[in-house]
Structures are given as structure tokens and as C-alpha cells.
Length: 91
Image (cartoon, rainbow, N blue to C red):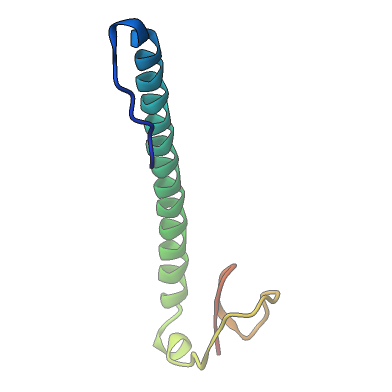
């Protein structure tokens, strides 16, 4: 992130404070955006972990039958062992 450099002088102190305030607000917004993205990804990973655990509970005969990793967009079908938005493990 690039923030403007503000040099304070006696006659420009209000502008210096304004620049510092803007830089601080931008930094806070950036940090909030990062936290939001991390929280979202953590929820997605937790959901996928739960789905993977349930799928594996079906037994080794099921997950050992996986033949393909599909990356194309398609609807879930009987050949999908574990289907997600961005990938599918297919038997």
C-alpha cells in the first residue's frame, strides 16, 4: 500500500493531520479486508474438511475407487465421490 508522505510545517499542520488520518483509515480498511478474507477461507476449509471426513467414513472401498480429479464445471452425479465448486474427485 502506498501512502502519501506528508511533511508537517507550522502553516500546514491541518493538512498533515488529514494525511495521517487518511493513511490510518486506509490501513485499517486493508486490515479489515484481510481478516474478512481469512475468516471466509477458514469457514470454507472447515466445511470441506467435514465433507471429506464424512466421505471417508464410507470406507476404503469407496475412496480407493477414485480415478479422476475433475476441474470442469458440472452437476453432482453418481460418479462424484466428493464434489465441490472448483473440483470433483470422481470414481
